[in-house]
Image (cartoon, rainbow, N blue to C red):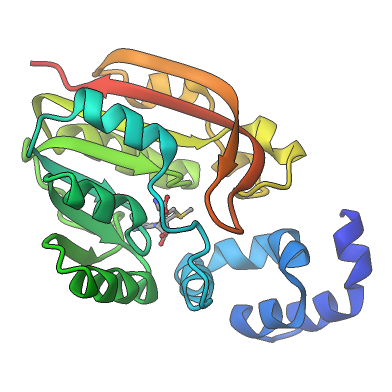
Length: 245
Ligand SMILES: C[S@@+](CC[C@H](N)C(=O)[O-])C[C@H]1O[C@@H](n2cnc3c(N)ncnc32)[C@H](O)[C@@H]1O
């Protein structure tokens, strides 16, 4: 238990006593919400993401992720077909579409997907935006030139299914760009899940993507500036993986 919990103990008790996640998160302020109902939130991820994407301000900003921005231009085939699993309201997928890639996004949150579709329509951007749970989604095989997974944090049993599926979705020689928080992130208040089981190390990724060629894989500290939910010094792991020919 941390100091935030003490500060809102009364509300938290209420939150645990039958309020919905959306109701409970409305009762507490932004910083408290990050930590308090972590267990409850992750028990119903769709409700959590819907609530987050209902906020008027885009919680991860409007600019693309910096690692994706740099690596996509180096590694993705120009105009290639790119899958974005867990793309939220589309800040990354839309940016790739603007660069001329043929983008397909898939996300669990109907609210995020609706927001992504509306933004794409307003910007006259053409991309395929799908709402689905990646656990039950019918994953294509050898279909994409690239896959980019940015801050898609999953429990181990889901990771075990979804990470290999990302690689299988690539054509031979296709590229996976990946970035997520590491367990070291637990000491920062700059975003990410507060449960070590949902955080990844380079070793975990090397093992999950064992069939791929590792072009780059590192754990680093970076200063993120991606809207109110990703802001400040952060511990991330990122990498580039190539599907074998
Ligand atoms: C931290 S957000 C990152 C969103 C986006 N990649 C970005 O960087 O702006 C994680 C996203 O993964 C999605 N997600 C989590 N579990 C999922 C699942 N099982 N199937 C599809 N999407 C999922 C959530 O809905 C959420 O939009």
